[in-house]
Image (cartoon, rainbow, N blue to C red; front, side):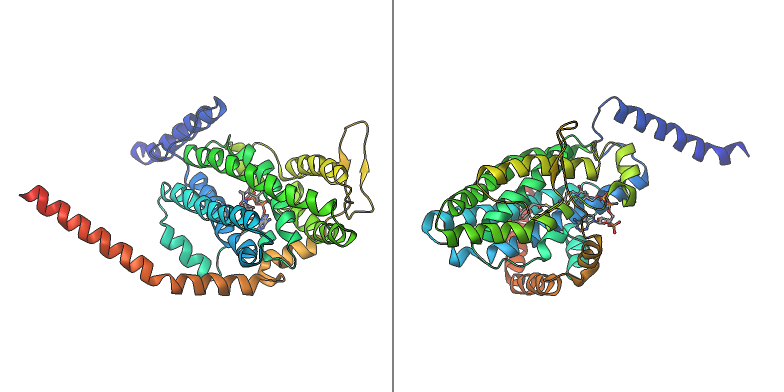
Length: 324
Ligand code: FAQ
């Protein structure tokens, strides 16, 4: 009888120790004991994040050949390459939890994995590149600055580096918007149109409101989320409204008002039906994005084969040198 009860009691003690470490602000590292549910939540969230970085290259990659001048092309190329790097860091972070990058990519290509809703919207004009840098990277920074304090060490450390790069992305995007906004009336209208189309989808990036967020309770309890979806969304709105006004653009929300007591910009109701439609696979570009990822994966098969053959050759040389 006693032997049987050792397991659960041992687990209770481990869980108490794990939660005490988090309460003390320690980070959890890959070889530390963690509850299976913590590992599962991290794999779920980190894999969605890595996929978002990778799929997120597509809307902007679409404009590399059409950037208006060399400086813009160089900036955009660098940004898109950075996003690929972010995907790789986070896939590596997920590997520390025992899930391979190949397994996660298979889920993405099979259409079984989520990635951020924002990347299912089309980039119709050059000004959309400005809007993405300003709003999408701006939202990502607000979200990921908090994740840099997450309890899981490899994820938190990846966020520190990623946020530095996202800051450059945001600046290049906002600069594009500033220049268009003070250009000809047509250029200003173009910037406003991009803001109109990207504003609400950017607010959706923070996820459902707190009362409808099934994962938040566990993620908060275990120190992965340090602020709630709604708190971060509000922080983003407060930062961004001022930036829009500074360059003479209007936020497309008739209900937007400043609350002098809290200092917050109170915004109107988000279209949650649209949000759930998009994350359910029925956004404007979901099918196109998956088709593009599958084609890129197939076309890249020879690169993976070549890298593997090279690695095997190097390993064989190492073995023969060490055997000699
Ligand atoms: N899109 O219970 P919650 C970037 C799902 S990176 C799609 O609140 P959670 C850089 C959620 O997964 C952008 N699905 O979920 C860049 C869950 O589904 P599940 C990505 C969403 O995890 C810039 C369900 O709804 N950033 O932009 C979305 O507690 C430019 C219930 O939601 C990250 O991934 C959504 N917007 O909170 C790249 C940051 N929202 O798994 C290229 C890390 C929610 O139960 C170009 N992730 N869902 O089936 C997070 O902080 C969190 O996962 C949230 C969601 C806040 C996104």
